Image (cartoon, rainbow, N blue to C red; front, top):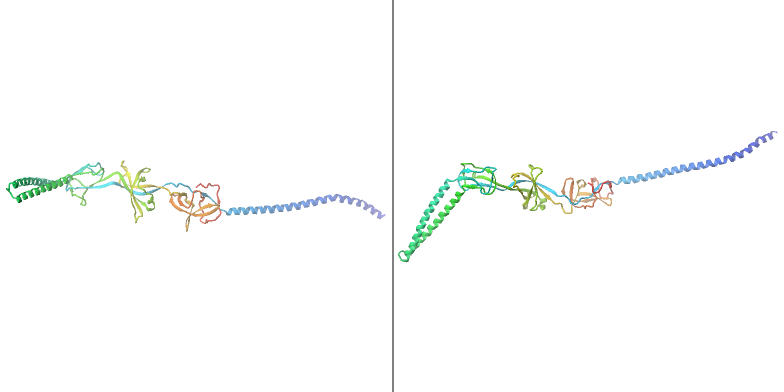
Length: 405
């Protein structure tokens, strides 16, 4: 009986288990699928992470490489370098500056002009009283009258003797003596006439006239002064006259600019007393030689001063316009590299730096003229590093135009 009871108890259980197992089978298959999907998700995440890290590393490597290539600003050289003014100091002098001396001894009787007077050519400046010269002239005229009287008598005697010789009333010797005396007296008359003419000419120097139109810049005499003829004696210079209608300016041109200084050029002249105003000058001559001590060329510039605004002796500045060298270009001063082997500039060619030697012409301050070594199509590096060398790869800054300074 007990066995049957057990059988009865087991029977329902045995019938139930297959049904449970049949229901649990789909759940176990679904769990495996979830497990596989989870593993796949994990593996995908790992793979994605690895790829992202590799991509990040590649990007960082590229950025590092790019960061290692310096970026530079460049500029293209400009053609048609501007003219440069060579400014040289100078001092004005009168075109003609002449001291006036006396040609006759005496005393100053009267003067008619003083310093600063504008006189015309031939204008009377002063008169000299010459009592000794007047006496000499009177004596010379009296001697001339005597000589003329003696010559007249000798001539009459010579003619009479010539007539008497025809009738043999006088000898040939007497005729010759009379002819000789006539010739001698005529020579004495000529001498006396020359003496009178000399003294009359000296007497004409009693009046002193201006030799040319100009300004009286000095008067060194006064009424009653003892006047000595000639130059070099004490107080012998009576007046000084200057022709100021045209002024001369002598300037020393440095040797390096001498080939560009040509006769006929029209430099401008400025003075501190006339700010903002210039006067046109003309280069009229040079001494055509370089001074061995100063290494300069002496040039003369004439300035029209018909208005009388410029005074002789004024300090001036002469501005010469210098033409640029043919084929030259200009670049900013901050593109230059000073190296032991010479002056260099950095030029970008095929994305690489090339240090190019250049020859400098004129300096314009913020720009310099390059006479050889560059072309207008070159890309010149601005503010190059002192450590810059040839062959370095660089990148041109595209945000700044190559023509900008």
